[in-house]
Image: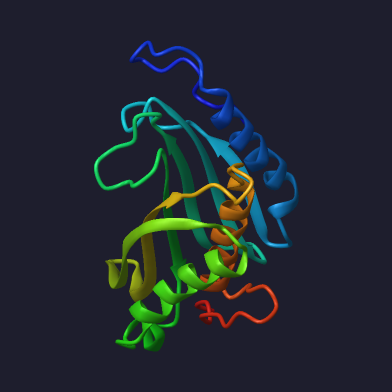
Length: 200
């Protein structure tokens, strides 16, 4: 994994504080994976902030992928409007669910609570959290097959990571909290976390 160290803006290499925070993310990447969960680096966006790093994940059950997601860390030493800090995390989770789960009006609130509870449980200090939870049902049609229906839940969220009391920024705990959320939506929760049932 690499951090975007030479942004197009020409502001030079990433500040040492962000390099140290990124190191905690790299360390967590090695131990955050669990059976069925695969993590890998993806190119970081270059236009949202001077410095960035990104991780993608897939969750599989047997030979089928049941969930995927992306975790992006943006760093701007000057901060940006609405961030209330200099390091913003943008996260996305998509998972297949049973149609009756997608139809449940409580699903959106439950999905959002999983995110906030995961951050709290992991001790990932944060502020200015916001996002959406979307339930979708799609029907596929084709001349050679019977109509089929897919149900999904998508969670899009962002929050500003805050330093620990000692002044250090531990991005590893934020990554672990996101992995907890991803696995919960896929039906692979850590102990003590309820989960959606994936489509069979």
